Image (cartoon, rainbow, N blue to C red; front, side, top):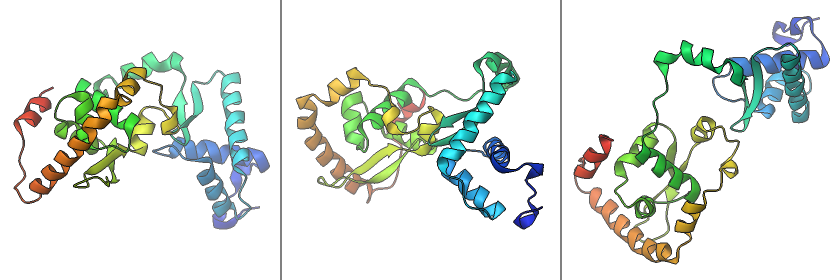
Length: 233
């Protein structure tokens, strides 16, 4: 017996069908797919009641147990608020060799430092990041935005209303985090940000940034010498 749209369930019924659907969706999805979305798709295609999210999680657990019992190199892992197909560490060297020519570009030290500060202090402004780093961060923030790792979250209520930046879902996915609360505790960064001197300088930096942004709005765009130096890093 077929469901709507000719979906036969591959001959499977009940929990087995859900396991097949979970496996297929996680395998085919370009990005992590949530348990809620899996349940929605299951209900839409079969015309049946949507399974509870806990049923989807149970299906994932069952699939992983089966993979382990059969010594398969695959696992379904929780990743950035959803599920994605992954391989076990033992086969990593073989995959690395296969994609040796397609290695992902590494973030430079300056980009990593800027990204870390943004992640731990978000939403935050460019002058706050620059105060912690001690250098101009125009290029670094722009590059991180181009890579889809940070984005504008709004404007500060301080003088000049400078832009507020924060991390994106792409950041969580890239670093294997379910949410921003999964970030490790970096004591050194926190001690700097909690320094009373930081808060004293913050107001001045925000005012300076607000004036700079208003000035930039009436001047033609250009690349500063600082940006050119950082771009070579």
